[in-house]
Image 1: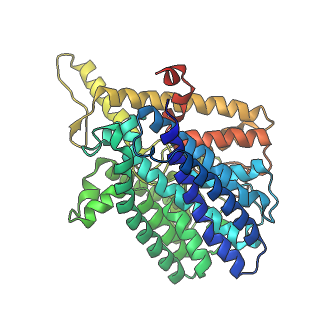
Image 2 (image 1 turned 90 degrees about the horizontal axis):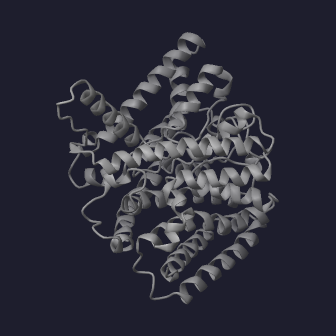
Image 3 (image 1 turned 45 degrees about the vertical axis):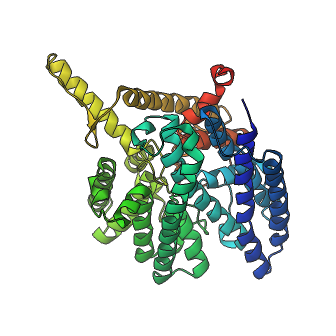
Length: 481
């Protein structure tokens, strides 16, 4: 394999990450926090390494073949957190490199799990850097989901392959074109979210930090209490709205801007997601009113925000929903695996895979009842190819298998089984908080062992990259091809 295009692309991404450190450096400098020096050193070190990678492999970054695309996809999400961890490890927070890498991986994968306590008094540059990491990760996964993963035929994502990507050699040029179009929309949504947060009563810094993590469905906050710090119905509704927006395919928003206002509702995946959102909000609201004696307003506010936060993988919490009882914990545990739509910043298994599975099962059942009949499963009006059905089934099987293996491994480090399963589930689904007293909405991951944190970091990576983008690298055939 020619590694030069891989190293060139990776070097460019490292340089972009270094550029992102400029803003927290200036923020700490302006506010008189000494951590600006840490950011500055990390900036130069990161830029130097990325620049050397690009210079040593120049004139080779414009054509990735299929194997190189797999490799650069995984390396980007595995290597970048190592550089992103530098300011965290050497800041006044005094995190170990394991904790810093875990935090950075949680940021770039838009998971939202944290090992940091005392966020309310943390340096402003660190708070901003955490939000920026999730913001970068959000736009990165959108571009990958639209331009790269369909070409790699990962977990049924080929169903979203468009005519624009006829050959693998077009991945980088097309990804660049798509990123320009989507980035403008992404920035606009972030600015609008920030403005509405400020109108709802947030300060400008909190509004900026939360706007970036809301549209990225990441969930990092500037407070240990997350959105509960603000105790505001208006803030909760802004967060709820933009979590839903962030979980809808961004290409559909571009189609709306180009004169197709009903493009969102015509998309079967989006209709399914929005229908599920409405059902869950109504169900949890009614349950809290009947069984927990909430007022209707409080039940809708707390129930809707927290269940949609878990569904979309954002991970915000406005209250400790773990105190609502065993039923709510069980419901939240299963909902965390669902996720939003492919082509969005959301994570989890994704709505379209459940839809493909259900349609395939219905077709199979009808064929069993009427063996001579012809029943074709369709998605968005088109027949579902057999390779898509096979990919979805394989994805679901491997997801559950890896979930069980990682849960056992994390439990072997000393965590109780509920904590282990909840932590692994939230990592692979990129949700953030899990359930239970240790890693639930009122806790964090700091008490877990270093081994458990590395296992969970791997879980975040493999969950964010749709499993097979990572698993294929462990195949000897991949390296022999």
